[in-house]
Image 1: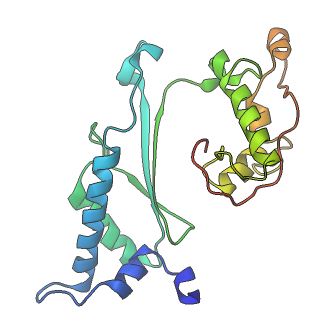
Image 2 (image 1 turned 120 degrees about the vertical axis):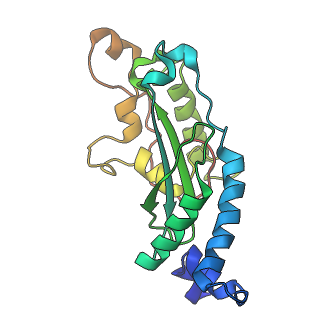
Image 3 (image 1 turned 30 degrees about the horizontal axis):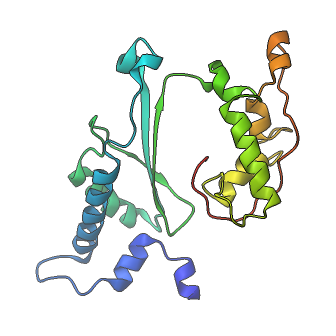
Length: 214
């Protein structure tokens, strides 16, 4: 099992795939496997992110979008194989977007990150206030998750690393956790002052699997 710890997805395909057909190179064979997998992925995500046009009167004309596809490469040859597959596959979304390929540290993941950017969450009170808001629900669920030791409750973050980046002070080069920098108390908002957080739910990262906030 030790040998598999440092193998990336393309290494595993190289080891596991049968001999290529006559006239087909090994890189073409591996590329064909990747193509079929990414075609399935495109069917899952092409219409996944909905745009709420009523939130911004200019609509899609001012919407900045980004699509990143992360994968680990051992060398330039592996990257060339993957880039050829992406070029053959074409757009991944209903709006004709091609992904930007980024190097992933985790050798075992093929990860797609999709974002649409136009409206700052710092302008939406229902999100950033520490009471009657999305962040109040986040604080409550994170506190329950930590108190239970990750047993029985749904995790708040998508991974232990996401929890570390969001909850741990100094993780992002600041003396405040990211969540503390986002949340504003009602009294602070009225004074036009800085941030305030009710209680302290921020602990060290645990490597629990997760599903929601990342």
